[in-house]
Length: 330
Ligand code: ADP
Ligand code: MG
Image (tube, rainbow, N blue to C red; front, top):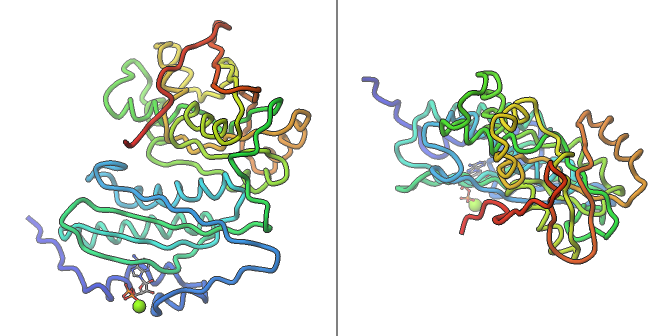
């Protein structure tokens, strides 16, 4: 049996794990001060968002630490993307079990290193504590955009076209695959779905190109129908989705062919982290140009209508009843 290496004290840990992630951001002061400063260019404003992950709720205790770190960054970048903001910096709050090992922490920091570089962010501060309970990992992300241009949820109008980026349903099917469901699929297809569940692909390059183009926008974390309902509720409109238009990966398509009832998972499952947005009619060219410039496929899946409620037209052209819209924590 190997004895876990004793952990350095808190300040040595911060110096070892986190200070390297602040390098290159002068206002982080090497994580040696009480606080950080963030300069915002004239005419821009900060967009700020937080998502936290709890061991046993958002990830399993034996999930790889690097993957957990990357998902923590990505779910936050996804919020910035949906708001049209360019990622800039983040703060990190971690409550860790006393049993955590140095190897776990190093892998966690390596995951942060990889993805903060991918999205052009730096770590500028945080807090670290020990806990007797499960680990709690909290990240606050900062992004920038021209003042007043943040994409909101409440701007959808009747007649708007409804679009989604990437593919939908992969993460929900990936979770099912991890639970041993979806027998009869190829190993490659299962792997694709599981990877999409474990590692979101946020779309910041697309999001910032939707500024001035989209009426309403959010990222799909709770499920397509539930998140569309969030737009509809605050915009005071209804919506219609055509199932036949949903962009499905080859793997999701294969799963659906074996088990048509999975359409409901695709419509209501969460964790896709794609951008769901609306534009006025007649903006197809602008949307296509934004998608091409961002190298992210975008598909029109329906439209915004007057009234309330979400109507889904099934693959057979008939209305498809959707009872529960998505994931709820409480
Ligand atoms: P304070 O006592 O002022 O709250 P701390 O001793 O908790 O400060 O932290 C010292 C420095 O290390 C601060 O700059 C803080 O932002 C940074 N820091 C602490 N924990 C983290 C962390 N998990 N991630 C990034 N920076 C951290
Ligand atoms: Mg202090």
